[in-house]
Length: 377
Length: 246
Ligand SMILES: Nc1ncnc2c1ncn2[C@@H]1O[C@H](COP(=O)(O)OP(=O)(O)OP(=O)(O)O)[C@@H](O)[C@H]1O
Ligand SMILES: [Mg+2]
Image (cartoon, rainbow over all chains, first blue to last red; front, top):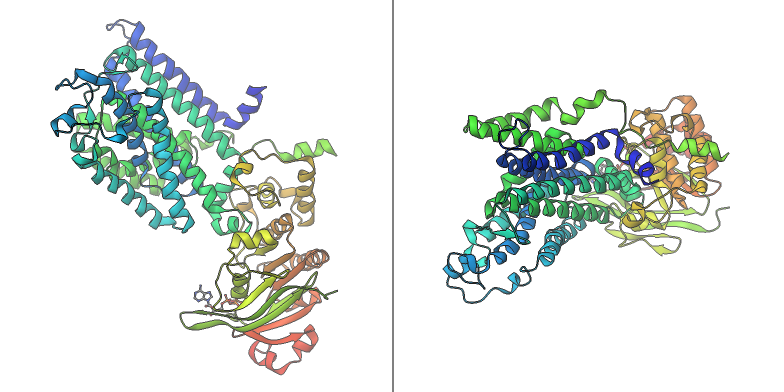
């Protein structure tokens, strides 16, 4: 029954995407943990971490696609939500260090001892609990997106102006988090993590689980996003993207629709950031850099906006190229990224997903309502 | 038939950077009345619809609908009061099917949460179906709206208005880009609609106006120049001078 109702919802491309994701999500950790290092099937530890990072980027791209590809809101500040989710989990891991820090202070993280702080700031309280940190991963990006969106959408800020203020948002956070007296580790951010829920963050097995969780989060968010965009809600936000005033004159409160999708998307970005930080082992203000948010938009455009799985694929492919090039030709990366952005804009408006357009039209239609009608008459 | 006043514009003026697009315009439309509005380009016909639907704020005057003051309401509130609008440039959702366009327009709870769990009932499907037949788009139900001809898009937009079940339809240039046969069908359709709701139609096509066979208001430079039957309008020297005679 459930399968019957969920399969048409995902479309064939969606099912393929989920199947591949499941295979990778289970296969990579298995091949990493259960094969010996000299086996040709062995996946090395560094590859697990790298892959897990890519999966988080893929989730970030998916969240960008949800607002941009479907609702036409070009957010150039989604990196902010990603970073906030990362800081929330980073704060938890800082508290887990306890007395094992350089200064051996069980109550204060090292950077606070270094700054001669005596007591833990109030906003650090609660982060010693994992569940609280998880709640913040959702609440902080969600609340910020709600406040920001409420102001922006109610005042009908759209297009380029909206993009600019999203850039301003992430830039303002970048500057704020750089300050030592903000209490988030300033320039250095949060790092030297030891463990998460009692498991060492360095251990291969922890990395494998984080990889698996990243794949799971991407898959779940994909299904949720798919559910949203296939509903009447989804058709309305596509309407907002294509003819906003038509939607308004039909009597829909456009700002409420935008706000809802913006908040959902920000939460997904926050979850991506929260999975990212334990895998890379550090979160610092550079994650708020405006260029990060712009890169996420390029991944989405490259993969094909308005397809969800395309955006995720775009993030994976571009980051794989980036990792290769930063090793092989360190100076070339930015030029390649710029060139990719231009090529996609001009020659591949539908992105990578557009290359699969030759497939039977799976996305095109949910079962024709006509059929049901005929049956009724 | 037109005993009760549904829409009432009283001395409205709107200016853009000092230019008076509407100048002390007054107009009353009765319940179940169809009214044709004609006038030269730039006369203020579209601006008048913008004011009624809350898109443009007026400088002076008042607009009331069903004895409700529309001042201070936004487009959404006014649409939900029961005023539907077809734009001069046909505006439909190109990337949705014809069926979906009608479904989105259908009168229903408009909250985002309702939309997330929305399911069409049998009765609602039949209503969409009936509208499809009415606007001659039944064979194209599953086609993307973007693939329709210009005239078909006009019909689809009228169909969307019908799904909203408004008490008043504002229809801006419905037959622009239509063949003669299509124009004739549109006139029949609008006359049919006017049996159950009030309709205000703006058009330049005089044959179409004649086919509607309703009271005509001539706008010129933002105010009413003449009003009456089409015959009396066509014999009005002032109207001939500014509009018909050109
Ligand atoms: N937003 C605006 N800003 C400035 N001027 C405007 C605006 N909207 C309309 N106008 C001007 O107001 C005048 C009336 O325009 P309107 O579109 O109402 O004319 P119309 O009667 O609908 O003409 P047409 O038959 O060409 O559609 C025109 O001179 C137009 O240029
Ligand atoms: Mg006009």
